Amino acid sequence: MELKSWVEIIRLAKFSKDALKGLNRLLLQLSSGGYQINESKLKPALKNKNVHIIHFFYENSIIGTITLIVADQITGKKGYIEDLVVDEKFRNRGLG
Image (cartoon, rainbow, N blue to C red; front, side, top):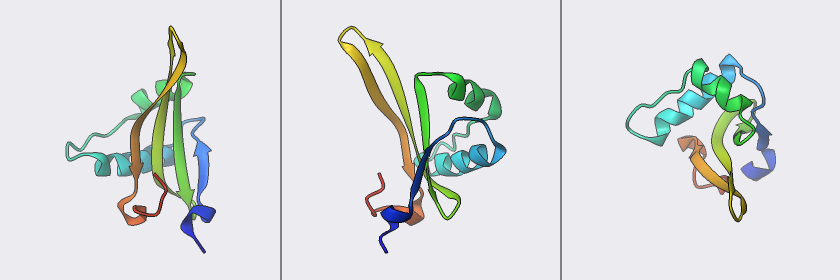
């Protein structure tokens, strides 16, 4: 069966150590700089109504993440995608 039919997409609504760990694992694949987020940065982001962190799950593991930033512009609300990462083992399958 196609992988996409088994992927669960969930907005991260509250902090958890597992979510932080999964997010940091993916962030290491995003750039060679080795950026990692910590609890003190993730918690405020989760409380911000204009930040939406979405995780892709496969068999209870985080295999991807995307951050949507919503901004009020003079022409209306706009959404900006930031930090789209799909685990290297699951790339080229149409998840991004």
